[in-house]
Image (cartoon, rainbow, N blue to C red; front, top):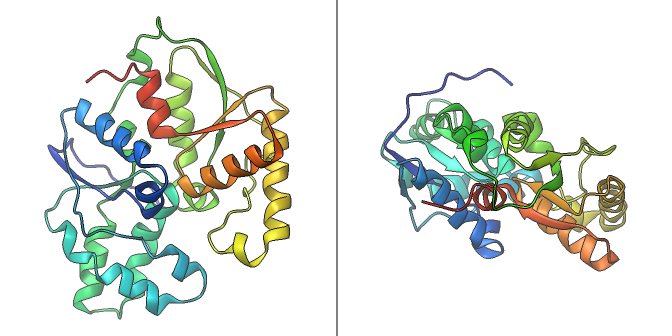
Length: 258
């Protein structure tokens, strides 16, 4: 992963909310908007947006992934950053969208331009907006101990574990506890969990056991697919582990004030 140069603070951004947040955890998307707006940024949400195409791409269907991407290339026409509250979806858009089209084509050029403007939410908050999460008061908040989960794609392609660690460690009254299997996949892997349910189930069971062994009862992540997988598996097993999207966790821990 190459180091990137960050732009000056913008006045406007686009939000690519991801299909999972749109369908299953809309509050995380709303909280992401509120975090950005609190910093004085105007958030634009193109309503025709859909999926990033990762399910098709990771299943070996780049042509179908290209059609998903092509349908959205024109939605982000202004030269504003595109903020994604999911490291894996951001990684798909930033690193793989340009490869889906014939080199030298107009679509490849548009995908390349767009990819350079894609930022995962926490990366954008700390590297571009320079938000000081340690400056928020914690007087009305009870102390919390949490574990962090970063999806494989987010960790590998966007380096978002670094940003997640930075913002959580800065929060007053919050202690982040590392666990033995933090770097391991939760077993979701998009269609992997459908094609290999037994292996996926064993992986998420290991993840939950490792998180619970810390004594923490809350797992925070910036990737909705992992959250749904871990949260549902924990509930099914009766494990004392709640899950929360990092955007909602940050909004809650910083008082939620505009």
